[in-house]
Amino acid sequence: MRIVDYDVLRELAGVGTDSGCGFMTELMDRFASDARGTLERMRACARAGDSPRLAREAHRLKGSSATVGAVALASECLEMERCARAGSCAGIEAKLDAALTLLDTTHSHITQFFRGKIAAPA
Image (spheres, rainbow, N blue to C red):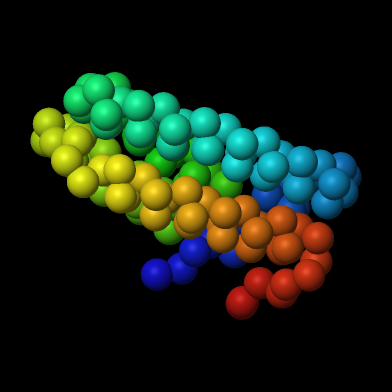
């Protein structure tokens, strides 16, 4: 599975052309910080057995992840959302640990792209 969608990143780069890469890396830093907070809220929901709230948090993060091209993270959030909507928070903590690691990898890929350190596959 792809970690990021480079087509989405190219579109975002086009939108932020006038602002430069600093704006885009700042935006992605903000996304990563917000996503980390959401994942921690999801962990609290899982521990409390609050599957409806966990599903809402996962749904929100799924959407924002897809918007910034973080497709693997969006996919993980979809899986957690489905489990939570089915009323099950069991096993979610391991998925959250994996999602946090994936978030770090995703953030690295995206910021390197915007800093021009990696070329996006065509």
